[in-house]
Picture 1 (cartoon, rainbow, N blue to C red):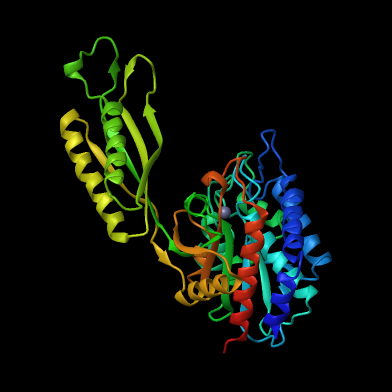
Picture 2: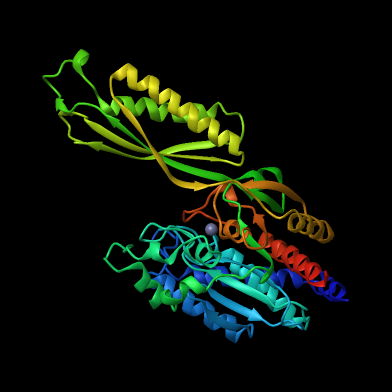
Length: 429
Ligand SMILES: [Zn+2]
């Protein structure tokens, strides 16, 4: 019955176009909040533009869609559409509205707009779900000005302790918890405000792919099988600082030269892995960092990503072995720091993946399974419920930049698959 209505509405002449048009309207109107000169968007978590976007979305979720709005202790915005049986688990969907500096209009925001259009369709067709449906606007998904990411989803799933946020401040010295309060959160309640077991029946997030696998192979959407593991570690190379003119080459212990060889080794070891593993040294500091002084010390930060835990271990260990030989070669002791970040690879719920694939087939779209190489709110949600993700194609694989773009056609298709899946799951049990 529900599906007849949905199908007729979506496939009736022009319905798709209306959906695309409305999705485009969301993208354009929110793209103006925090717009940069380069055509990108800067809505840094809890900054003035993020606060403005949050205010706008709350207003529109209530006014246009009739959702019941609340903000939880962590600053997440939740819009609820009640179900027939209020005691059953929540069907949840959503993403984040904050962006990186000079990022794009789609990362995160697209998932919220699709979720809201799904609600609009349900309203228009007067479809009442058995389970309540909630649209989640997660707070501070991107690394915020204090440098911590996924605050809303980690906090709400019990994976972030509120005490650990106490010391963080942004560039202007504003304490993070004060910023959360200004956004409507309540730090004193954070500890108690977490999802209960069984509270959520399913969580599905639509997100741009941020790679070009879908685009290059002509897929409408991707069913995300899981999220890559991420490991970060620091290496410190100790050399001997000294006059860049008077210390002859055979007497040097140059910490930067040794570090450079280590950086190259990280690159080569990941390149030779043959799989989808990647590794990056994206940050390095040099002391004293002076033009006529032999570098005395360098600290570099390595990040490895792979969906395979053993591959993470292997690359990590091979880099360490190589570091030992570099140490001998240059006479520069290399210290390996403990892990500063360690997200294990995580598979999404098979029942959600299956339901998404089936819905995509029913809707007549071309989908493929793929792994996410970036972290997402859905990753943390997978620790408390059956979670899954739909990826939509990113033009040229770009994201976190003004050029980030996804054709609204794909957003409309993903919305249709999301809605079909939620309605199927709603009818179960
Ligand atoms: Zn995102």
